[in-house]
Length: 104
Image 1 (tube, helix red, strand yellow):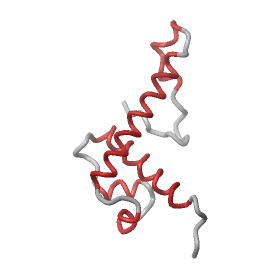
Image 2 (cartoon, rainbow, N blue to C red):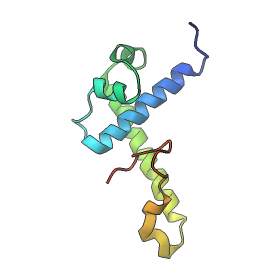
Image 3 (cartoon, rainbow, N blue to C red):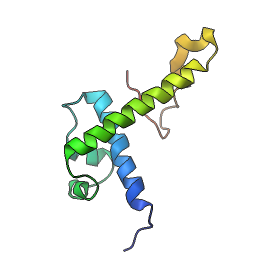
């Protein structure tokens, strides 16, 4: 079965997003390849079609986590000053595409 050209890119992005989420929740030593792939809805066997090593994935996941944090910080900065302490109001609702992106 042939996949569309963007399929590999979307799959890789999904793996990186899930790895970034697990890094924020579990710390640098927490996520393992099997757990990341399971969270992405994929099998471990497909991991090496997208990454040469876990280190390569973690480097991208860390960059993604910083990018996500920067976007959140930027959105807070555009809020009225009196609302900035309520920055969590800007987070997407549960069950959205970014569910649990910023765990407590």
